[in-house]
Length: 353
Ligand SMILES: NC(=O)c1ccc[n+]([C@@H]2O[C@H](COP(=O)([O-])OP(=O)(O)OC[C@H]3O[C@@H](n4cnc5c(N)ncnc54)[C@H](O)[C@@H]3O)[C@@H](O)[C@H]2O)c1
Ligand SMILES: O=C(O)C(=O)C[C@@H](O)[C@H](O)[C@H](O)COP(=O)(O)O
Ligand SMILES: [Zn+2]
Image 1: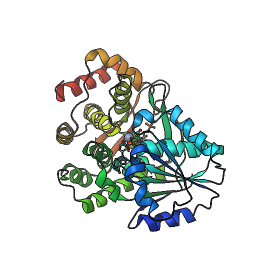
Image 2: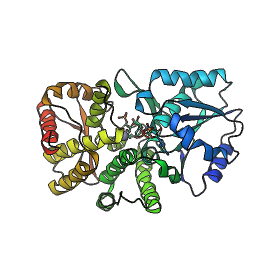
Image 3: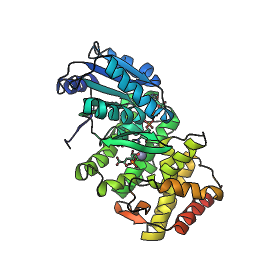
Image 4: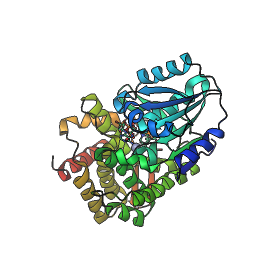
């Protein structure tokens, strides 16, 4: 898989002009969602680089990361003259870069695309590394492909319009990157002052966080091994997210991951000795900033069933990525049903539900 270019932009206009030049094309398309069309596209159009672009706009949020929305993007490309030599620019959060990336990967068996992430989560995680796809059959990212963008252009100025909930959603993936990298990065993340954001400092943090992901993806682009580190918190987090979708109370991805990290740090402590004090500090940060996903023990079997669909699983065994310590990653860890239920008991006890 070709290594993609990830740029922490000083000038988005300059970086975009160069990225477009690197992708010779016959027609240009720009995919936004209904919010990024209003909030992010106008500043991009001022550059003149998109003057001939065909705009495609889809509904916002994960509830639109569906086959129906994907088909609408395929239809727009097909009816508005896209060819195998056309170029797609995805301007949005992870929903847009996941769905748009998969649309690009599948239209005429694949066209080039550029990601311009506009949420914190997309900047540090979703837009990088080539995981694309949609939710299907009530399951997160059930359909998709590994298809990296040609270029990823990170412009942190877009974060100035991002609401607090979505800021913290992305921050959860940064916390995950801190936990899988080193104690200094983890400690820095726990003490960031989110009440009055220093955007220059945030840009540096974004750079460090996306580098953690880039380094892992470069070692294992197709998730045969160490890339499973990036899935810390997701075995449980995706089950929470799928249950929330099924109960029509959708939660932001990062919140599900944060609550999943509570569970999987407990499992890490129980099975591979993750230090209790670091677990306590991390859980305290999550409790203070992420609220709680509520369910009772009658839901354990359904959560367990969701976990059996996790793409990391092999031969029917639920797979977890755990930590012996910060930065000390244990992939391909398993737990029996009783232990998983004990983990869910711990979550409910420590989150007070
Ligand atoms: N492919 C990957 O490696 C990867 C990694 C992490 C998450 N994901 C996926 O990413 C999705 C979550 O991404 P997300 O959190 O970016 O959600 P999102 O794309 O739904 O964006 C969240 C909300 O923020 C709005 N928004 C976007 N940019 C904005 C801006 N600059 N200012 C104001 N509002 C803005 C959007 O319109 C939307 O309403 C999930 O589907 C998750 O599964 C994928
Ligand atoms: O890039 C990866 O690898 C990740 O696991 C990043 C995750 O934060 C992201 O949510 C990803 O979409 C989850 O992958 P999945 O294979 O569990 O769907
Ligand atoms: Zn994630």
